[in-house]
Image 1 (cartoon, chains in turn yellow, blue):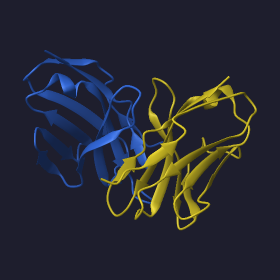
Image 2 (cartoon, helix red, strand yellow; image 1 turned 90 degrees about the horizontal axis):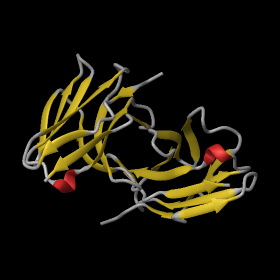
Image 3 (cartoon, each protein chain N blue to C red; image 1 turned 180 degrees about the vertical axis):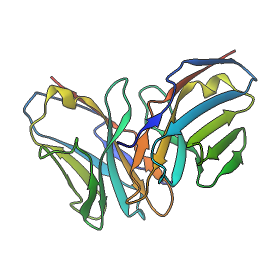
Length: 111
Length: 111
């Protein structure tokens, strides 16, 4: 069964460093998303991506964040200068014509 | 602000009983409604979706939607200890299908 994959599973970084989180969506899906979940809190929408551009973003998704689909398979989330409060699980999701399917997540720890 | 409200629980039910999970949402324009299951440290896993008023059954799970009352519920029949998890109610309000999540209800099935 096709699935969304994410790498790395856990990323530890120092405050102020740049991180790139990677996702491989399900191959025939056209809509891609990033969500995050701070420990003990809700899953929060960050950004949606369609037709090689951002289609919607939340207030969380400020200038420190960017997304890219550098080739036909990967979908990345970059955080330019990480802050302590960026520590969270980051989930990638993709959608074809139906529901969203989530990847296993990347746990980001900012020290 | 579009909100999805759930009681965070925990909801404890004995094995074999029916677990009833509830959710309300604020946006009357919401079109699609989802229940995800999330085990601790894992990503959300879609278990049910419903678009129309009424009931939708899938195995031991029944989703119920009442758009007039802005209310969604999930019934789990013959609850099993393996059903112990956090159940996330999620709502889509159109556009590019971003999903707004509730905090989740923690379900504990007692053997």
